[in-house]
Image (cartoon, rainbow, N blue to C red; front, side, top):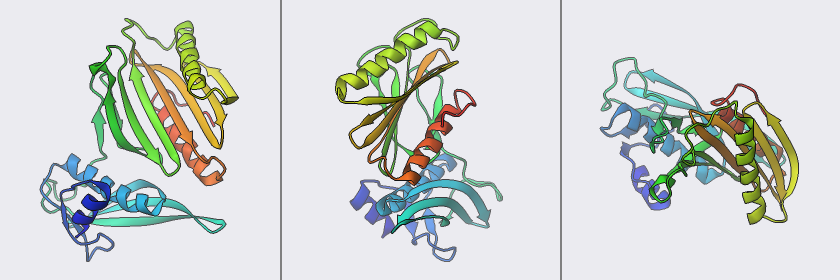
Length: 263
C-alpha cells in the first residue's frame, strides 16, 4: 500500500512492502537490496512523508533492535504562530538486508564522478538530495552540480574546474575573478537584485541578495583542484525558522571546505 502510494504521488518506486513504519509493531519491510541502497530507501520514505506535510526534517540517528531498525528524525514545522521542533521516527524491517547482527544501515551518499574525485551525502543539514547533473557531457570543464532542497528552499552545489590545470585555495586572484563572474551571472538573470552582504575570507567568498521576496546567496571556495560553488535561495525569506534551517544547512556544506561558519 505505501509503495503504491509513493509511486503514485511522488514517482518513486521504492523496494518496500509491509506496514506504515509508524511503530515497531507495524514496520516498513525493506525488500532485498544493499545496505547502502536500504539506507537511501529509508531516507526517500522519510522525505516523501515529511515533504507532503511541508516539514523541515533531518535524520539524526539509526538504531537497531533485532530485525527492526529505527530511523530517528528531528522535524520542524509551524503550528499557528508557534514553531514546533520534535523527534519522530520510522521503523524498518531490515531482516532481508545483508547486515551483521548489530549493524545499522550506513549513512548514504553518492560519487560525483566527472573526474572530481569527490562525493556528497544525501543529507546536508536540513537539505536533501534531488538530482545530479553532469555538465561535462555537454561542455568540458563545467563539472557537475548536485541539487538539494528543503521547504521553501533550493540549493545547488557546483564543482567544476573550467579546464584549468591548477585551482588552489591560496590563489586569491583566480578565486576573486571566478566569484565576480558568479555574481555577474546572478545580476544578469535578476537585474533588480540588491546585494545586502559581501564577505571575502581565505578560500571563502560570499555574497547575498534580496530578490523580491527571496533571499539568495552564493559562495565560492577551492577544493581538490576544483571550484566549489554553492547557490541557495529561500522564498519567502520572512520566516525565521526556515531561514535558520537554511544557514545550518549552508554551514554544513561549507564545513566540507573549511571549519569557519558564515552566519
